Image (cartoon, rainbow, N blue to C red; front, side, top):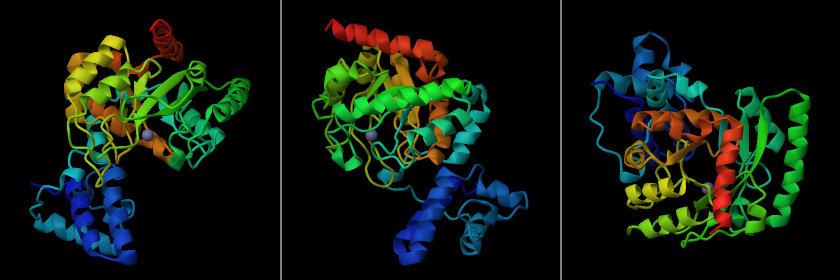
Length: 351
Ligand SMILES: [Zn+2]
């Protein structure tokens, strides 16, 4: 029995709950780093003779604590439900080693936020970072007007963003870059699965994500709400479906086999939001989804440039769950991706 990074993260998290001020902050930051950033197990680092302080956000005091845990191997009781079922960065790296082609096959991210809504980086900065990762496309999917707390914008603002994206694509073309920026949106859905934007605008976009952002703590079965969202003719991808959040909420429950079956029937995609605090859909739910055969989108939901690296969590989840490669929309070349969303739009026009 060795102490895993998940155990260390949980132990640090528990200590942070008993601490205050600067100490609490340092412990919480190290706990998050254990889960999100450390690429290998602390136990392996220690065994190799390297310093634990080589791991992100580990200072001498926290290193001493971890060393003690590695020595004594304390029994770590199960974390509360809000912190259960999340993989660590080291887990993701280990899973992806089984088939490194999953990383190279990834052509682009379909959920990115910019300063247009609640992102920290501009369209230019995000697309530069995506180009540096070798991507063929990224979709800019800022928030819509129904979510003012996240800087959601209206139709007129999105039409303005189109001009900005066209100019950026022109620039990328002149630079000989492979990357193109797609026009997307993360449309806020109400509890009936209805969107908050004019379909006329939505039909000018390359990809439309739909997501719930309210009433996320209901405990009853919410299958109907999800079926309505998947049925929404304007929505191509259901983003962060469960709406869970690490240490904050467990997310909504539904009969995922039914939701996935409807998605398969309508040729829609369910998302794996790779944000480490989300990991939504998670491996367990994906194993259920897989049998329905629906499409899956693996996106980072990045709000900053550094978050693009978290795609590994999504790729690892899909690989671990056994999602077939041809179901992953991000593995398709850009023109195939666009013909898929165009075909959905075509269908919507006939509803
Ligand atoms: Zn969202």
